[in-house]
Length: 406
Image (cartoon, rainbow, N blue to C red):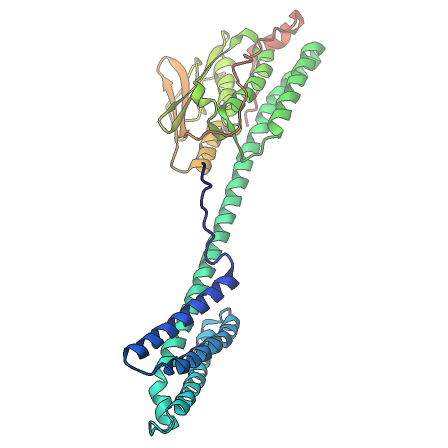
């Protein structure tokens, strides 16, 4: 039989209930301690009634003090502590006076003591009990205040992180839209209405697919690959056979969770710097595997690689003449999103060989989704062949870059 997980409720989740629990437990413990001490010392049992009266007196006075302290705790420190000392002195005086009066009645005819003697002799008990109670009251309330401020700060940090993730996510869309709309505009100017309409339909499907995802949400790798397929369908209309892809996703990696739209900028980066500047195009490879409790993702291309030395963020910002210049958004954006989502518990590396090619390696904690996800390889990338009329657009894609330089 499956056991439901035990989730204890925090003690101070209900402050009012916690206060009464502590009140009853504290004063009940004080009564039992004094009563057991009296009985152990051979005192008569009826003395327990006197101790009970004294305990009820302290319990009642502490309730009055709680009302006073609740008003003082939010004041300036000087006002709070001065008024607290005065209230405590008055409370101890009242408590000791009642205790001395009750003791006088109980010991009448047995002990010859004055009220002042009994008051002085019994003052240490109220002072100890009410002083300790006051210290505990302020300590608990200040602790709860600090906890509340820490929770508020944590919520604000979470909101700031979510907002930053959304900002980073939305930062990607204009670059892709600019390129695609430029291609559609070119096809329209060349009166290639059929391929322009097909590209517009694919763009609508891609945007519909991405807009339903929350900016800071996580998706499975299978869903992320499905988004990549939609993006690559659009790019194949520009580059045709020049754009070649190879996906190798392990079965265990398909259900792994990762930030949405994490891989699309990497593939877009490869299209921009590997496929676009080369007449023969390039191959873009995506592989994913699980090693222990880590998900390893690798995005590679067969482009020219880094044309210059690695600097700063390893961005391709120093391309050779005639190659597109980087805006410094793509890889830096991915790096920032990984830092926001996983902190130091991730790995992000870029590599470029001497003979060309560029590789991005991502390693993040392996977390699986509970919901079933579609098989991204059930429907392979569509190799849509355009009509012969689209050749001018294809030549335009080969001849110059459609990406913004700023």
